[in-house]
Amino acid sequence: MRARSTPGGGSSSPCAYPRADVCPRRGVRPACAVAADSRGAVARRRCADLPGDLEDSFIGLCNGTNQCAWSADTEIDWIAYMEQIKQFVHGERDYTKIKGGTGPLVYPAAHVYTYTGLYYLTDEGENILLAQQLFAVLYMATLGLVMLCYWKAKVPPYVFPLLILSKRLHSVFVLRCFNDCFATFFLWLAIYAFQRRLWALGAVAYTWGLGIKMSLLLVLPAVAAVLLHARGFSGALSLAWLMAQVQVVIALPFVATNTNGYLARAFELSRQFKYEWTVNWRMMGEATFLSRGFALSLLGLHAATLALFLTTRWMRPANKSLRDMVPAWLRFRSGLTPDEEHRASRRVTPDFVMTSILAANVVGLLFARSLHYQFYAYLAWSTPFLLWRALPNAALVYPLWLLQEWAWNVFPSTSESSTAAVAVMATTVLVVYAGTRNDGIAVRKPAAKKQ
Image 1: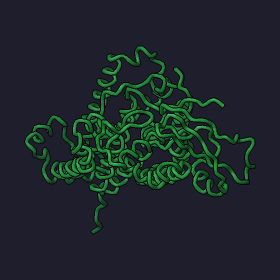
Image 2: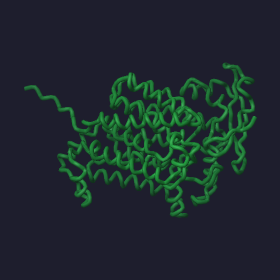
Image 3: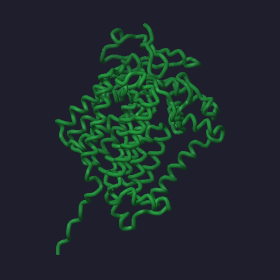
Image 4: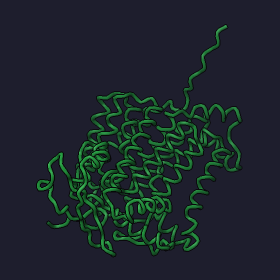
């Protein structure tokens, strides 16, 4: 059978044993693993018999199907990741020289350390089935964190089914082994820590996730606002310094070898995206998609929308405008009195934390230059909460979620699916802005003591 190309830039071949020819549902099933040659240019599959219960113990938890055993194409970037990690393990520290089958290493240092752990756990990357099972565990851990965050924000039970029903999300986590899965885990760990007022833990979790993939930069403005209100000006600066220190420490081996090479590769902002893999802007046409004017328009709209949320929504706990606060910050002083900082901190509720950070996330995704399918890891669990937050009615939340899920399951994307994907994100941003007019203001007053 002819191999078919994958978004990671390589090709993968179907398992040598077709589904119809191997093992009844309750018998012994093949476990597909992929190995690459020294250049990563050829992918081959080998099958080893494993008891079906071993697969079900992991994969069945996710969606009740045997995805790892029966999927014709599983990994996309895993082989390239492992090729890059192998060079790191063998002593290479120059980012410009670390390459894989899909190109150079373009993720920060935390990605390297995270996948180095997986490299050793999976027999130097050879045991892809085990890697997929580990990602199934990661999916369950992330889902658990998401549910805890929803519970802390007092989301009603009817929203929770939407957290487990996404076919695309199962594919991204359980089959594809993308680093977005780890970045998503640490994002939700940070949100939960902030909801529990564990500020240092949340800051470390966030900066580690950012060190895995720069996608978490999208929520940085909201994270900054949350920490500023919760910890005051000096406390927020201390946490910012902590996050910066983590980034410096994990980057030291690479910075010491080639500082410019590390910064240029790990934090590259000028990357050109391929039209063939875009999920969100297919309807614009390739010429428009690749144009500089379109990119600048998206950047301008992103900045303007963030500024709107920041000035009219995320500064509400301080009960002062950004214009009143900035002069004091420029003098490295708080724009609030100690009593005002205390009141602002009380207004940073679990609901405010989650609404602010997830709103910033969806705003960033809405105006992203290009979204690939793995970016659904950041969106899938944000949309149900934000829609409920603004439209607390199942009859409104469920149809929009279903439309979004359909759009992200069309492969390859079409003009119709891209239009639907963007429309749902735009609707989410609009209704959240309209539905959070009083966020950060109302604080429950303590009950009066009886005489």
